[in-house]
Length: 281
Length: 306
Image (tube, rainbow over all chains, first blue to last red; front, side):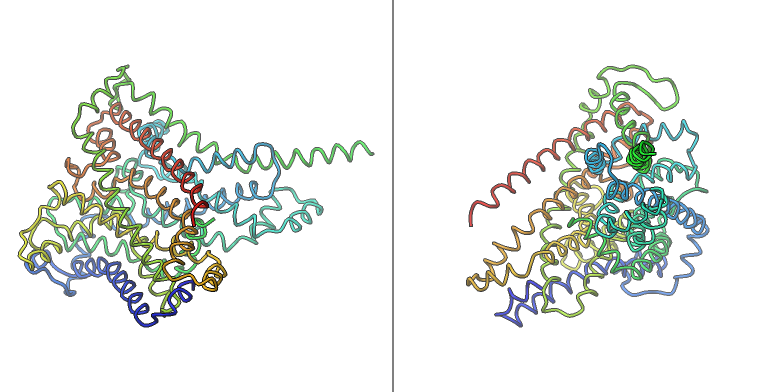
């Protein structure tokens, strides 16, 4: 929008350079996806030849069958789905509840507590990795999804995001009215606030789901047994196999990426909008 | 009668407070257990020798002495910084350029371009590292080596030489995050009021002046945000080197988090791993301090010159 005012003079030259930047950017973004797809349809000896193939072959199914014989692909996908869904549902509930408290309820120490939450966002969780692992083993949660789900419910960004949304999106009058009707604070949250912030659930939900789905270090540490591997850990196992069958590895990677691309394309506007809102605020 | 209504008022206020504390308590309880306590316990552990099974043995400063006499630890710090800078600095500049292009009203298909450029962000880092592992394969059939061979350049050992390893990993970082940062910059540019440009035009400002005096200053907080998140993100680099280099994690590409992961979960030396975590902690605190100082400095000088 602003560039219209800027670029009015040299109209076509400016337009051409803008298109060149965007087209090159798009090709660079898309090429690795295409390359992955091509390799997932080729046999290893084709990939190992010079020049390497640049067009799809016909071993898409063949390669995926090899994936299935090496790792429990659908099992891992199910695990990823279960963990991501559990964390998303739990985190949405806890974040909106806390966000509601910070946005609309009065209590002592509100500001300082909120700042504390923001500060935790700046500290990478890896710093406590070893004691975290120790806690999980002590609790007997090794190879248990609880090890992912319970710590995964801690989401400072989500609380911050929900607070912003509820502050702007839910008028005080409605809460006051509900209070006069004798609703408890939780009833107000559940019956008044939640129905008004459903779009926020959708957008934050996609962000959380994607982050959990793609998480790698923590699942790698606490999920040792292949039966509980998430997709990312299983892909790593596939990649570490003794004999490097690139067609097979790329096939596993391709099919692990496809569902997310679809989900993204369905929700992409919501998703991009909510990510940028989080930053600009 | 009267007293009962006042007491009801009071309890109403207290009840709200209690409810509020109750609503925010899950975060603080869970963070205390899985975030704060482990961090504090890392300090404690860094003074002990421990293999994760036998009882811990007090070790004084031996863990720190060990990692500081380990050339690989220095290499891991150096690698983290070099890869971080290579992966994020060009990325931020290119992201601003793409955001600027996306913000132009001269183009059609803006949403399509935006979606395409954002797409890499949704792929997992594991997938990115696997794909780029083949793109940067050592053999002549690796994509980059093949392209180089067209120009008569001999194949490069991407996973075993000083600069190639870093360039390969930095490329992965660049590719996955550029779309995200572009979207952030774009949102920042769109939040600049149009009136500013109109007023500048009336005053006779040129295009260059508009970019320099309106776009860039207004974008400063966003740039600071991106630099800050990119810095913290770079210091956490782990997945790319692990997948690209395998469990061996060669010296040319190992990062600090990868170093501490390997100490803990491959060598079972939890003490030295904790010591490495503490060093990383100090680095992060220092860089955060520098970031905060810089941003307040830039924030102040912003208003002075025109």
